[in-house]
Every structure is written in C-alpha cells, then in structure tokens.
Image (cartoon, rainbow, N blue to C red; front, side):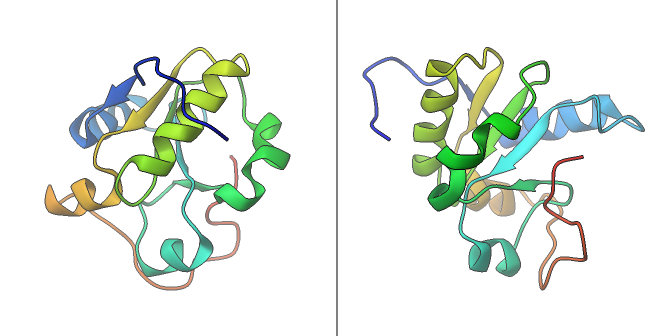
Length: 126
C-alpha cells in the first residue's frame, strides 16, 4: 500500500462521535469505525463497536466492507488509517475518511474506550 499525493478526507474524533450518535439505535445502518491496528493494540484499548481489520490482513479482506455506508478509518495516530483511506477510495469506496489523530486523539478528547480482551464477536462486521 502506497500513499498518493491526493489529500486524504479527514474527520475529527468529535465528528465520529456525532455520526455514531446520529445513528442512534440503528448502528448497522450508520458509519463503520474501521480499526486497522494490530490485535494487541485493539485489546489494549479500543472504541466500542469498532470493526477490527488489521493492516496485515486488510488487503485480503477489505471487500467484506459495504460500499453503501460511511467508513471512518482509525489507527493509533492517523498514519496507517490515512493509507487505508486512500486505498479504499482508490478501490471504489466513496464515503471514507481518516480519523485525525487516531486513538491518541480519541483518548485525549476523553471519549469512552474499552480495554481488555474483546467479548466474542466484538470487532466483527455487523
């Protein structure tokens, strides 16, 4: 996966929270928060409801993602997620955004996070 020189669509962690809140009781119709970090990072800390698709398996699995829902891509700081955002756009996904600052920004903003081993099914696509 290589970076292009095109600007990467970006959203703030506040924008992600607002979009998730707007989806309310219908999260399966709302935006997907795609976490591309490694499983050990996901176990350490994650956003509830995030879909885990680590970069080492991402190119083999990305077609599992629906093309008709917004996708917000998050990693630790925003670098890996920027590459994934560009890759998805290049592969026909129209509504994709990189989460600026990643989990670091999420935690600094004080938004809720989950720690420890995920429950069965947690991190899987709804």
